Length: 138
Ligand SMILES: O=c1ccn([C@H]2C[C@H](O)[C@@H](CO)O2)c(=O)[nH]1
Ligand SMILES: [Zn+2]
Image (cartoon, rainbow, N blue to C red):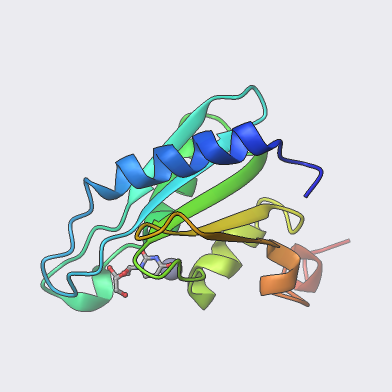
């Protein structure tokens, strides 16, 4: 994928794997890390944060994305997700991420063997709901 250089992908994956070490997942025991690459090369990470009231749990992707926004960064070059099996983001996260760009490259890594798949967010969520669907949109 032209937008990300291979050394950037490796760095992003490493950060997502490191963030996964902080995952708080005492209920599912499914540990996930995510890392967002910013335009200036900085990387911001997140992990899943579960709750005894299950539906309050936060996915790693949304934690990382929100942390980036909270630091003032809304323009990203890519996101990596590290998990057992290299899972794809859930539907809620696809929608959440699409707010900030449908072209975003999503790197999904299996922590067991380092294998990865890369897809554009628009491939994972075609025809996303966006602001143009709102009545207030000009
Ligand atoms: O892409 C994914 C898929 C799942 N999870 C989390 C949510 C929950 O804490 C646990 C099990 O679904 O994994 C993520 O963080 N990202
Ligand atoms: Zn999710």
